[in-house]
Length: 501
Ligand code: 5GP
Ligand code: MG
View 1 (cartoon, rainbow, N blue to C red):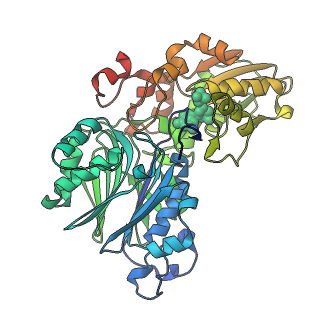
View 2: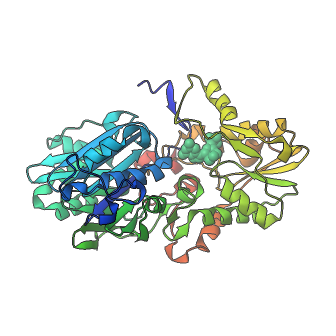
View 3: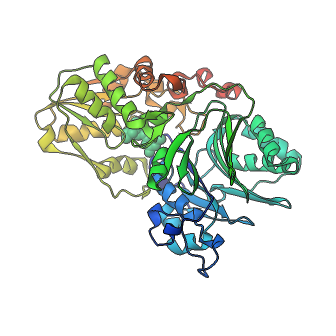
């Protein structure tokens, strides 16, 4: 595939993060031996007989991945086991393109892990698709990883010097090769050894023939939660995946925690590092689905509150408040409620915009905003409009949007942003454009306002954003705000550090 000409949606934006899921089934449910897949762990074995074969963790992983599709659309993969061997299937494309009913029934599985990828380190190639599977004399292991390691280069060099070979540019391969190195010491030791060596952000679902393991890095940068099924357990990046398969949210995996799930239940231990929660604030701003609850905070609540704080901080006289679909809508509703200005739809998003557009030139790509979003004259004509988006990265979307609003007859356009200016790169799983392409890195607010053609422009303050979140769950306070401040929870390689560039 030519990645120059076939661009993933948002290739010029921050890259979406990946989504991971793990399923552990401890018994086959009698009532699930139907074809009612959404609630079921069922799946008929090709021969339709043995009880073992009617486990279908792969199918549950599939529905969970469907709910996590917003976190990555490049590739999808599932690895599963019935206790003796690990099998896997992964391809480029959306979950629904990569798997079908027959494939999932064939896979079955008592344990499964799944992954949807939006490539962060490495290119969009099948070799980088996850999960990664390794087989040893003593058994197999599969890993699905969301996050990014900051010491990938050193670790890879170390592994190569000691005989490992690599087939991908994915940092997840480093993780599995490190586990492989100390696998003879036993899985737990191998995992803890590996986790002490890797630095950066990692939420992991790891699977052997006998157990499912969840890991969250010492800062809990990437999300991971635990859910309970009637007949088993689920690990997932976001709780919306639990809802999709009828699992109940138990709790989030804690920063620096490992959970091992097998027929005896869930065993938790900490891997000894100093932990301080610094979860990614951009999950609440943009990445996560609004119906997810992350670290005790409902994402939609966070967005409503950010909108309300934004209205307090930078109110303006206007006739209507609108939001940029989809991730700007929560903040827009919060802004409207707090300011008392009526909320309207204002903009329609085309639901059928696919994952990829064939758009060879920058100009063509920019025009695609018009295909994706359109304004509603009846909501806007002759009005003073406040428009809220969750973020400005390069400034492309908002510039086009303002053109669309003016075309639809808006008298004034006041742009409000429910996150602070994105000025620094992310080293923890978000593929930020280079600093020179981050409009707020090279322009101050007034310059950005002129550039995008708004009558006024304001961003929420960093303190305001924290205030919005703190009120929602004071106990889980502590965020990585590196893309806004240039200060990171884990030191990033020397001259790469955002502050020094
Ligand atoms: P800009 O057009 O300024 O480069 O990007 C801002 C817009 O991109 C906002 O509407 C925001 O919702 C969206 N956005 C922010 N982060 C990401 C991302 O990582 N991927 C994609 N596809 N869009 C993003
Ligand atoms: Mg957007």
